[in-house]
Image (cartoon, rainbow, N blue to C red; front, top):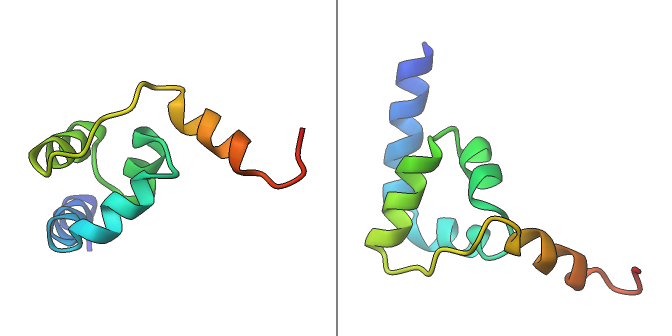
Length: 73
């Protein structure tokens, strides 16, 4: 399986698993999630916009993650 087939399969998975993608986007940055899912950030952003998910600013996911740590400074 070459890179093109992997990316095509990943895009089909993203389209078929909307709720999982949106749930994971809630705690992960767009770029990080795109890397994990093996899709481009442009593709992932367009799906999120199509699904009416509010797109966060670039640093917001990091702030969410820092706040979510129990007992951390």
